[in-house]
Length: 177
Image: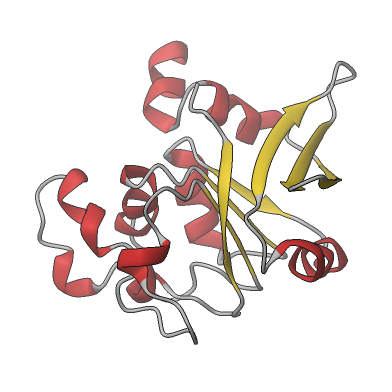
C-alpha cells in the first residue's frame, strides 16, 4: 500500500481546476512520469512557486471544489508521480474525486470547519501529516507542527477503502476477476 501522509502543501484557494493541476499542453505525454515536472505549474496563488513548493510534499490541504474543470485522469496522475497521495478538502469535483480513488489515492472530504482549523493552526508552519487507522476501524488525520499536533476524524470504508487497499481500480479488478 502507498505511504499516505508526509509533509503538507497548503493551497489556500477554492476551485483549483484540473488545468491548474496539470496544464492541458502536457496531456500528449505518453508516460505518467513525464507529467512530474509540470504538476501545479499553472496554479496562480500569491507566494506559490510550483518548482519550489511541490517537491517533497506528500499531502495537499486545500479549499472547496478541488479538481473541478475538465475530466481527466492526468490530474491525479500528476499528483501520484510527485508522490502526493493524499488531498484533503471540504469537497471535490465528483469525477476528479473518483479518479483519485481509481488511482489508489486518498481524496478526503473533511468538514469545512476542520479544514478551516487546519489552515488556522498549521498553514504557515512546517507541517507533517499522518493518516492513521485506529484499532476500532475509525480513521484520523493527525497534523504535527513542532510540538503542536491535532487530530481530525474521517471515514474510509466500503468501495473506497477497497480501492485504497488494492492501490486503485486495476489492483481491485485483478483481485476480483
